[in-house]
Amino acid sequence: MIDKSAAGQRRPLFTRASKYLSPAGRAKAGGDWCEVLELSEEAVALVLGDVAGHGQAVAEKMERMRASLLQAIRNDGVPSAVLAAGNEVVSEWRDETLVTAIVAIVDRSRCTLTFANAGHPPPLLIGRSEHAFLVHSPADLPLGVFSRYQAADYVIALPVDALLVLYTDGITEHDRDPLIGEDELVEAARFAYARPDLHAAQTIATRILSRRRGHDDAAALALRTLEAEAS
Image (cartoon, rainbow, N blue to C red; front, side, top):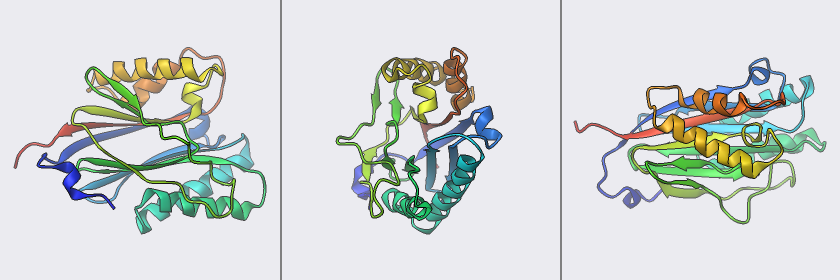
C-alpha cells in the first residue's frame, strides 16, 4: 500500500471534484461512464471507463461494469484489484467486448494519487506552469483481453494547487487525431485551471466538444487540489 512517508510533513489536501457525461452517456445510449466516490474523510475514488461500441446492449454492459467497479472499490480500495474484478465480469460475457477503465484513489491525508489503468488514455496533471500526462510504459491491457489479468498500481505524490483530469477517448480522439486531441485537452484544462470558480470537468469538455462534428459519447472527471487550512 501507500508509504506514509511519501507525504512528508505536508498538510492534508482539500479536494474538489467534478464530472462530465455527454448527452449520449446521460441517456444511457453509450459505453462511457464516470463516478466520484467518497470513501472516507481521507480518501476519494475516481473511476472512469468505456465499453467499446454503441447501442442498448453496450449501455447495459456499461451499467453492469460501472456497478461492479463501484462495489469492488467499496470492498477493496486497491485500484489494480478493482480492475481485476471488472476483468472477471468482462470474461463472463464470453464475447469480444473490450473495456478500458481507470481507477484512481486520492489520499488527502498522505497527499498521494494511486491509480491503475487498463488500456485507457493517461491522466493529465496540470500545475501553474507545467503539465504532465501520467503515462507508464508498456501500457496495461484493456479488460477482456485475458481471463486472468491484473494491472499495475502506480503511486505519485500529488501536488498542491493542481488539476487532475481523467477522460475517455471521446474527449481526445473526436477528430481521429489523438495528438491534436491531447493539445486541445491541455489548452482546455489550463483554461479551467485558471478559473477555479467554474465547473472544471464541464468547462473542459465543452471547450473541446463544441468544435467537433461527431456524436461519440464522452466522459471526463476533474479534481482540484488545494492545501487544507491549518486546524
